[in-house]
Image (cartoon, rainbow, N blue to C red):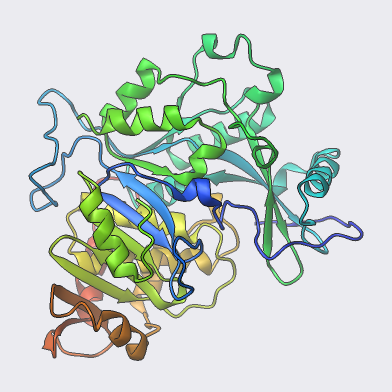
Length: 443
């Protein structure tokens, strides 16, 4: 990823960058039922400072997975005449990132930040500093894992929209336009333009974000009120509908709820303990079957109604963390669709996120399958037994707990079932390097 340098005077940035990575409260209130929920330790949803999370939703509209996939008595059976031709569809949050180097990140006040953004936009940057952003990150990562992907959202007809269409074509991703011609008859032309996000990088590699969605109480595409028939067809034909709170930047809550409810025809908890929080989400979600908690450099947790699976993160040299969470979710979708064992799926997701962190930027810079395989071939875990023992201590008596470990032999060690990294890698590598999964592996 190229960075353009821009010089500004008297600029500083508050402790939290744009809500894209540190979500504000409205983005944390996702109450839609779904088979997967992922939580990330960036946004506080409880009074305790020990753990805090961000919520994302990964929803399977009409379950049509291989035998052995997760089931519940509440699961909706797929219609007999529906053919699932798409693995993953993303909803909304399509934008173009403009990645710029700046001496200091934007000032804290809204007015000053808006003026800062307008100053940036006054001189359109060279195209080499553009990158696909938002849900494009997840779609690209998933496509590079061999999944068939589409994005559902809005892009304008200007140069930025054409750029996103070109990226979609090059990555083999379909795009379904959410709007119809009648939607924009009375909309101002500016509100129909592709959403831009200015990604600002200071000398210490900290990121700040600005977009027009930050300075309006209304979503960027507030004129969009209904789901078109084309969008409904796309949802119906997809195995997984991926939604996240950032979709509120451009779509109204009613539109998002309509899409999720249509897919389901077919929380947050206030708890400091991430496992208890996940279990509470499982109770509240009629169709929720997996809850995933991303613990940053510690690793991740996958919670089901029958057990808890934990996997420490991989040790890598981190260059840029942008897009790591999106890559992680893409790998979770891959594991779910292909019925890979839980601990292997979680380890794979950690590896895909880590491989993305070794590069610079998101969009087309997310990890390829080749880089993921290279990482898995010589893995090293960031194992912290003291952390995991403390976290799991209150849960091992009530549920089956599985923990990925460096060298402990398979089987139970005390009250925790340990699975070795070597065994996971030996199971995963042949699957990633063979042709048994549909889709073309990018290199």
